[in-house]
Image (cartoon, rainbow, N blue to C red):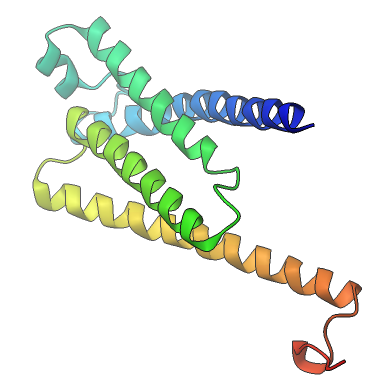
Amino acid sequence: MMEVETVNTAKQWLIRILVGGVIGMAVLYFVGGLFHALLHGGPTFLPVSPDLTDLVGSKSLAALIQFCLYFAFGAVVGAATLPFADEGGALALRSLIHFVVTAGLFSAIVWLCGWAWSWQAWLAELALLVLAYLLIWLIRWIVWYVELCRIRKALGLEGQHGKKEEL
């Protein structure tokens, strides 16, 4: 029974990572193309970063690196759609690790693609990522809490004002 559960969990992770990676590539392709155009003063959509092209010396290699980063970022975001752990300490640790990986990939993208023209711009962009991350976790906690209250009420474990009834 445990093996089937482990295989199902692994399949769920793989599916979420692959779907997230593909969505990440698609979304960041358009967002990146718009950023590249805005930052380089033209109305033309630029799918490959001119900054990354200059850095590596090849548009093909720049495109490969850029799309690998886009896929990896999407995959990490996709992995966050599954629960990390059941217990508070493990959840906090895994969430922290996930954020560090997410922030690292985000930073690699903004620096290599030229979206951060200074360390101050990078910090501002990272602050936006932190706010988005915190907002998502707050929404997830609220949804979880509302669901928990509904379950407790259905089981008759709550009295008035959401307090547990005395037995």
